[in-house]
Image 1 (tube, rainbow, N blue to C red):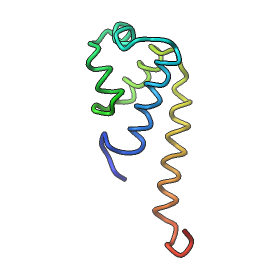
Image 2 (cartoon, rainbow, N blue to C red; image 1 turned 180 degrees about the vertical axis):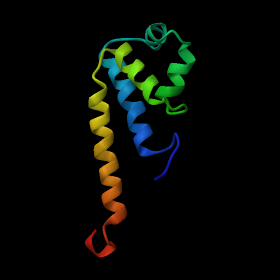
Image 3 (cartoon, rainbow, N blue to C red; image 1 turned 45 degrees about the vertical axis):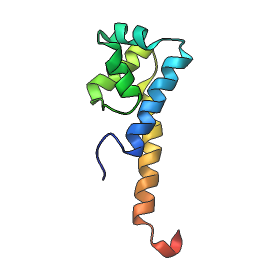
Image 4 (tube, helix red, strand yellow; image 1 turned 120 degrees about the horizontal axis):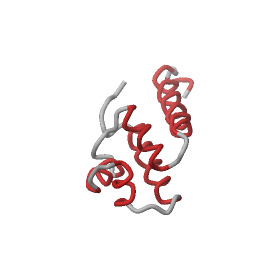
Length: 93
C-alpha cells in the first residue's frame, strides 16, 4: 500500500474537504478560525500538501459541520478499487 500525500486517497480527501467548505459557503479563514489554526494550514491541507491524522480529520468534519462517514465511504470505494486492480490477473482486466 502506498503511503503519503500523493496517494489517490489523500487527494480525494483533500478535494472532499475543500468541496464541503465551499458548499457551506465558508472561506479558508473562517475554517481556520473554527479550527483555531492559521489559514495557511487550511490551504496546505486542501491543496494536498499536508496530511491529517484521524483526530484532525474529525475536527475538520466538525468545523465544516459534515459527516466524516461520507468521506470514509468514498475513500473505502477508492481503496477497494485499488485492491481489486492489484489482485486481478492481467487477463481478467
